[in-house]
Image (cartoon, rainbow, N blue to C red; front, side, top):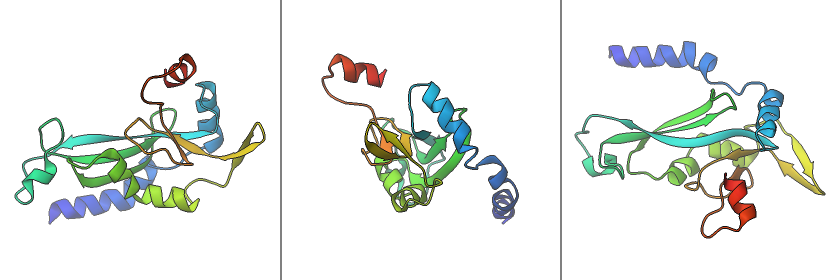
Amino acid sequence: MLLLQVVKAINSLLLWRVIHLGDMDLIMARFTSLGFPNCAGAIDGIHISIFTPEHQVALYINRKGYFSMVLQALVSHREQFTDIFVGWSGRAHDACVSCNSSLCRKLEAGTFFPHREYEVGDIQMPLCLMGDAAYPLMLWLMKPYTGHLDPTRDQFNA
């Protein structure tokens, strides 16, 4: 009961101070300086080690063989959290966690970021995130090329 009270207090008093969108102009300028124009953040999942759960044990064993839950984080150019999503079992793939997150729903609806589009050549582009190869390619999500790469694609991934 005490643990639940502490979690509720953290959520109501501290969470908004630690996890917030931040200055989008600064974030985008920094990602642009790193070679990623129109980028508003980087997304990835991490496994948080847990004690063996009493129920559905097999669901919590991750691909590395230990019990975990997945925490999905969206971070700024300074690795500051702008969104987190936690609670899926360690067996869940990053793409599955992402597609079921509130962040994904908000990005699909166009309500997470302030409405901004940038012109690249003659194409209007929305803000996007960077993710690793585990994530699906989406209008708002860039990921590296996979497979046999020509020099241009290999340079993009670097």
